Amino acid sequence: MKRSSLMLPVVLILITAAYLAGGRGGAATIAAPAAAPAPAADDMRRQVERLQQQIKEMEGLVPDQAAVMTHVAYHFTNVYIAVQKGNWPLADFYLSETMNNIKWAVRAKPIRKNAQGQDIDLTGIAQSIENTQFKDLKQAIAARDKEGAEKAYEVTLAACYACHTTSGKPYLKPRKPTEAEVRIINFDPEVATPK
Image (cartoon, rainbow, N blue to C red):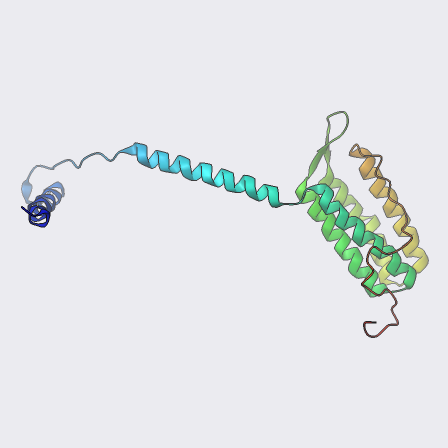
């Protein structure tokens, strides 16, 4: 006998059982076979393991704080050179990038252990610098005050070093730069077109 001809009676029996299980016609309720919970639990466990593996792989793609801080150094160096050249819009741009990158660095590692194993709240330090030294530097740049900007830059370097020291990295000693980190950007504010 063909398989398809056997299927019709099975289907009819299942339909009748489903009808009766619904309590219709006063017939006794037929219990549906219990679903096997193991496959669902195994499937859920495999999904969780897969997600954990994907998270681990993604974490490996995210730059660590040291990599982000190279961006901070790059932009903050260019702030100083732009101030020296009197290119105020460029100085403001690089300061904004510096501040954004410090926020990124803090998101990458908001708490750091010092040499004594104590937690150092980098978020609080970064917010403090943003609300004081960076604010003063931003105001000096907006006022096109070269002397004020240079002084604010030096004070900010001292705050950066204080953070490095507090974080157990006193060997990271920032200084006033002598040249730009970038060579493709022209720092001369009088240049109208790329040359």
